[in-house]
Structures are given as C-alpha cells and as structure tokens.
Image (cartoon, rainbow, N blue to C red; front, side):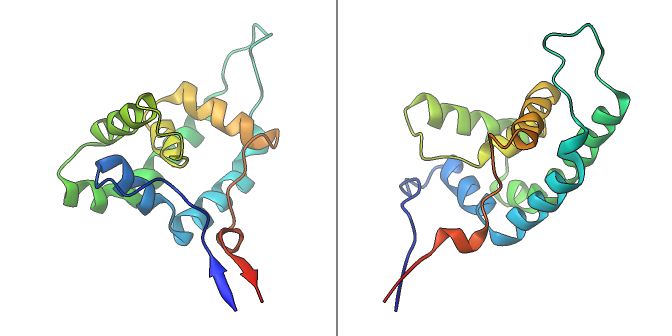
Length: 141
C-alpha cells in the first residue's frame, strides 16, 4: 500500500514556502474548518446593497485575527518577521507565478477585513473549501 501526496509548491527555501508548509498542518486546517463551520453562514454579500457591514462580522474578523495570530506567532517569531512581511513574501511568490501556494490567503485575510469578508463569503457559497487532511493522500493497492 503506497501513499501519494499531490505536489505542492517546490521547496525553494523561501519564507512563502515555509509559511505554506506550516499552514498545511492538519491541526491548522481542523481549526480553520471549525471556525468556518461556526461563522461563514453569518456573512452576506453587500455588493448590490446599500447596507453596511454588521458589527458582528467585524467581531468575527477580530476572532479570526486572534486565532491566526496565536497560530502563527511562534512561526513568525522564529523567522523574525511580521505578519505583513510574510503576506508580502506570499504576494511576491504569486506575482512570480508560483500559483501552487494556496493557504497563505488565510494569513492575508487576518490583516485585511475586506479580504476576510470575501473569503468567508466564498466559504459560505462553497466556492472555497477547507481541505480535509485525509484528502491529501490517495491510497493505491
């Protein structure tokens, strides 16, 4: 019985790669899945409306920000960088065509409310999923 892990970003030693690798952890994805299940249904798209964002949404954003800050604080401290620097490294990687990076969007959403709101709507409308760790492996006999 062999296990196959789909190819992700190539390990180029960059901060973006190390962050991606960290955010791929099963414990982070489980925590994110619980958060999304608890909150995504509360968000509404206001693009075609004069309504304002609810205070509850911002409170949820602050909860998400705390969750991510708690989650990556040790990583960032070990790397000697801020969340903004990590996000910039990830944006640079995407700008360089490194489309394999998937999960640093979650970190970017922790420092930008508008992005967070969009990500939560994507979860609500099933345009984005939190990968289940067992889906990263394919069993072959």
